Length: 475
Image (cartoon, rainbow, N blue to C red; front, side, top):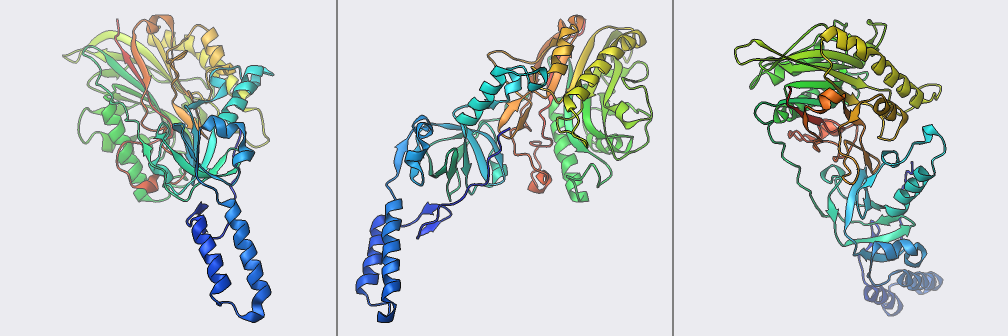
């Protein structure tokens, strides 16, 4: 993946943060003043000549601001090198990091959303898309407070210095037009809402895997933001990834969540509290109840890994509290991350193993819960065309997320968007799915370890993944 190097500033006199602050006429007046004003002693004549020569050379580097389209600029970077230009093409923020923005004419998608990934062998289309992404985007180094700019924002008339191919520099803040976050309507009458969500290391214990939260205040802020987001989803069942293994973290979340509104409970997996990432089911006790014990795809049920691929049966509750007999099964999965571990092993192979384990345990779940309606949710750490996803699709599970001409996403990494969070359904459940969509309240905001230092108490950016919202009408 292309990672731009830190831009270097072309320094000239009377330049601040890469933006020329004085006109050519001002530079000339300074040179004239040095020549006739007698401010340099006669003994320093040679130094005076050097200064005059340097000022003359510097004026050559200061050109009038030229208006160019992005296409013109990309066609000949050398022509505009070290010049200040105004880019007339409206640009979309594709991502941000530290003091730089990734800009392109339209949102950039990860190549593996559309092309067979490298794990399946040489993919010409993959390389073409990767090269196209790199050629299309530009890196703008600016003074913005990066967490106030988000992916999808529109930037017009960018004025900046061209520092090298693909890199621009400005000493000013960039004004963007925010794309509004869609409001999430409540589920319709008679429908049940299920949400799959990665909640980014929600830990009750600080330190260790919870290194992104270093103080109780930051931990409290994460809970405040998360609870606001969960309440706005109006879900009957949540399938969470990246929650601390054990009972501490679910209890801490429920204590805040149950202060008002529906009463939620969690499925206790009977695991000791560990400094490890797991998963959890949380459900609205007024709408559904569990049926049977939870099930894991792992043979070692004492390992923290068993909480990363888990299944649970639920049944709806009637108006008088009686079971309606409408059962369904939810699977939550958190596949191996894309980052290689110690030894640099192939993490794609681990994700393929995760997919095999999930598929192998499903028949056991159908027998245990007495129903075949199955919804597969979670963070699969795979884009659409990668092996583990295609293996699940070939096994007969329908990918319920919007694809094709309507490109969508649940995650953004270094300017490239795509689906890491998934929703699959077997044929009988697919007929009962009314709507599926990611809710873009997280992924477009800048990802950083110090996210909770923003002191923003809205539900935006409570995690780095967008939740997947699923509305069901059970038959």
